[in-house]
Image (cartoon, rainbow, N blue to C red; front, side):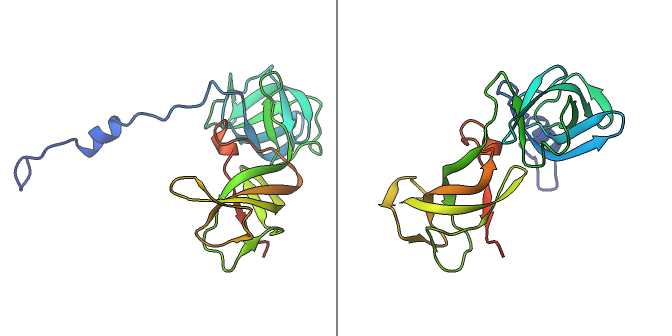
Length: 214
């Protein structure tokens, strides 16, 4: 009971307790974007990153894209403790066999070589929304793209269609330009290959931001 009389509904703690934890995408194939790669004396090469989907465990054979390096995972660690497996949300370091620190780098993505391994893409089509950009954007616009841990120069090679942000329906084919507030499907060409996925398959690898070079 409060000063205003009887209260109804849940307390804050009850409301927090009632929250369903998010479903972790354990059943999807592994996707682990690398944040860093370390060379540790007496151990070897240790890539570090957050598991976005799937599971990583010792003995697994992983492929790094777009480097196209395949190797076995010797061990998985989090907070200096060995793990039987790393699951989505875990920031892990994992020791890999016979790979030099020069072969893989930040922005590469590790995946299970036997279960839908990741690939590098040279170009892709994506929906973009222009937010807070002065002037107009046309074919040839060359921004910097950030997707998972990758940071790469790209080019809007073709504005394919302008779409209604509310309905997702096409309102104009091959527009000459787009401006702030517009949404469009754009063919993006990358300055070098990058691992990117369809948002419907692997959401964390299907989201990106682009910004001016300056």
